[in-house]
Length: 156
Length: 156
Image 1 (cartoon, chains in turn red, brown):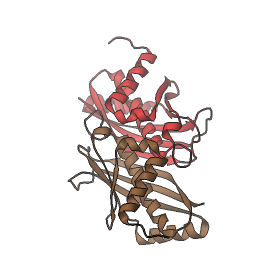
Image 2 (cartoon, chains in turn cyan, red; image 1 turned 90 degrees about the vertical axis):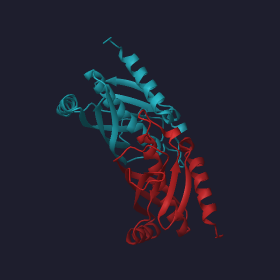
Image 3 (cartoon, each protein chain N blue to C red; image 1 turned 135 degrees about the horizontal axis):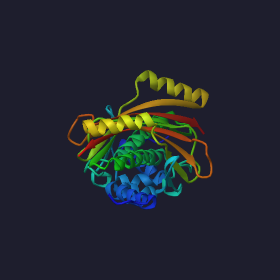
Image 4 (cartoon, rainbow over the protein chains, first blue to last red; image 1 turned 60 degrees about the horizontal axis):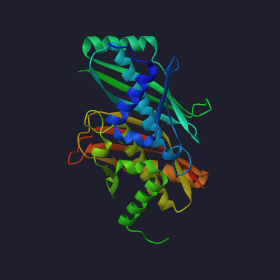
């Protein structure tokens, strides 16, 4: 399998998400980074605004759902077998208003969760993994919103 | 306060939601009913489709968030004092794929929850209420997705 640069990988992921789930284009999100801190998506406030001039909870939920989906997809790409992913559960807590452009940081699953997921997926053809995300205003490292999503991967 | 027909009330609610949270227009949702079964919103599958040809989890989350918000707003309208609402928590379980146009049914809060909410809001200026929604395909009464949201109302 050809080596893909991180930049190309994230560009492909963004195109895949917007192509497959066309409503997501209206978030005007971008995929910014995939490094030791996890996967980082961001979106401007303006298209996601609510009646309080802050970010709409529905937009934040959608962004968090995508970040967890993206992280799951990037894990699966490493296994190099065909798959599809569905979101099974989502749990979100809005702790503070998001008053600015914002980012979603989906952290890497812990090593043992990752290993269990990989083993179940490769041996049973079905694995579940929990992804944890935080939402922060740009230029601010306070967790305004926290999200945990359960994703199930099926071997195709 | 002038009497508003249910039809006008739902039309106003839809305009308010789309005006205040403009990204919601892309769901192409409508507010269909507000009766003894609760508040019912619906949306076509096409603009909310995902990579599996079923409804995208992020769209369903957004629709459910709106249905709970709408139900909370309709309760507050009855109290006839100024308010604003924020969503505090959301908990969603995707049990079955949604393969068709779909509806979200937000049921009426139980009487004692409603009364506690009303009392807290009117006396303390701040009340919290949990709203329960189910998502079903049109023409099918199987609960494909369940959602519980916590909403907080502040007296303005």
